[in-house]
Length: 324
Ligand code: SF4
Image (cartoon, helix red, strand yellow):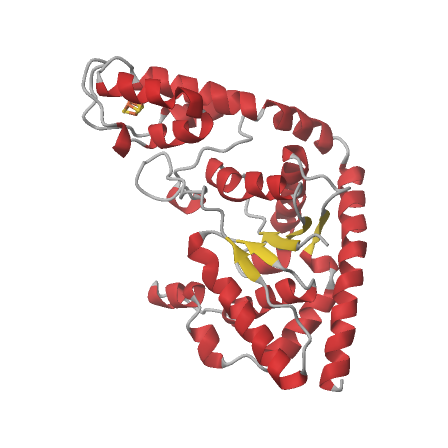
């Protein structure tokens, strides 16, 4: 039997290269090996987005982005988190066995408090329980995460273990699936992780002019003023991206940079063209999908039916085991 992979993506606006390389592309590749359940985490997004129109739009756009990039609804169960009420019901049940201290130690909560977040909500505090519920409701085997998100899976495992030892074997224990090839993608500033909050993104579906402008604004080796200056590719973020997008040419790029025979502008133009070519089909498909929103709804509704069937079976079991 194929192992089941689960992942949730928060709708947060335009996807950037960091999202694409760190999550979207690996998610799509996993479809060929595993049974994948992917959902749009619009309940999670509610902890930060307070605009009804914006949340609905971002949810729809994320569905379009993923389908354009290659999610295949015939292989993958693709749905909206809010279409599965069993998960929120399970969240309450799991919260009754989750120690307060475990949630206090969650990185996202600790960061929010350390940064002096005003009026932190109960939703933000119990966010890891909802996440555990998402993972456990579908009896997931594997959850793809970045190295910095491993704690989410540890919390879900802790909660599952506590439940199983209290009420009897109910949940499968999930494992993290960390893609060792996925490195942190730095933003155009070459310093911080690519993120909307730093304003350093390259937006994969921006129009050609904007996309090119963002790539061309990338900071490179500061020692290179003239084309003939000796470069240090190991400290250059454009070089790091070339390793991903132009691996067969990487030795030549490195040599030419070190010998002062390659201009940064030239290298960035080459990178820009390569990424654009890789995304060409997705960009065209995206335009077509936007003209057919009924199809998007149909895909999400069909996915929700399949996901709900599994979540209902789990919740029935949980209710039996707890005496509800
Ligand atoms: S030539 Fe390329 S690798 Fe070298 S510093 Fe410039 S952008 Fe970076």
